[in-house]
Length: 306
Image (tube, rainbow, N blue to C red; front, side, top):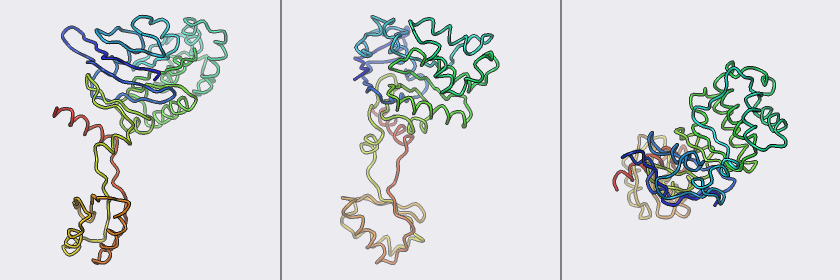
């Protein structure tokens, strides 16, 4: 694992922001941090990035302890904060040259040009950053995080406050960076965004609620249901379904049946046949899909009951 934490804990006075957190991040993958406001997502990122030290426990980032050797960690990470700061009276290129000066780069000019072109900002490189839109500043902030060729990117709410078109553009850039081999830690409140981008998600509420691929969490939390939409549903049809011994459970919403089968691959054809023989006129047969929002809310509700 490229990143591991061991009972990572951070307190601010009497308040515990992160409590005994144990997570892992795989190289070249996008790991999403999900959780309500105040759950400890940003605090966790700051500890992994070596910006603050844990109260107890520790993290290992590419073999380095951020609390012991923050400077070494800073060489291999890029970070995008929720409110990235720039010198508004300086041009975009001059801003990047200034920040590149913190690293021993032999090809700073080439790196700056590469990512300004990638982010669609090359033609505006001599303009003052104060004249940039929020979306342009966000793309510039991602450029700043990339110019020293880090292995790991920490992105804190990268599309917050952006309009839908720019948000989609930024998500495309993040996906491309992952395909280029970057490891990305993405903190977001946008569950649709996490579902599009993340191979694994960590649901955090001070401590870890769950860590896995969305598909595995769906399988763990929700039973498979066959969804059958019909022209109409009458009592004769319901009676015929109720007699089938391979149906574990069924429910109805208007003209749609939700049916849990003992063995979906084996019994679904038998179910369809029985419905047709009972006079049912089928419009559509699909598997019920559970969104990442369903998973997230179910996990938080489950955690509240513990």
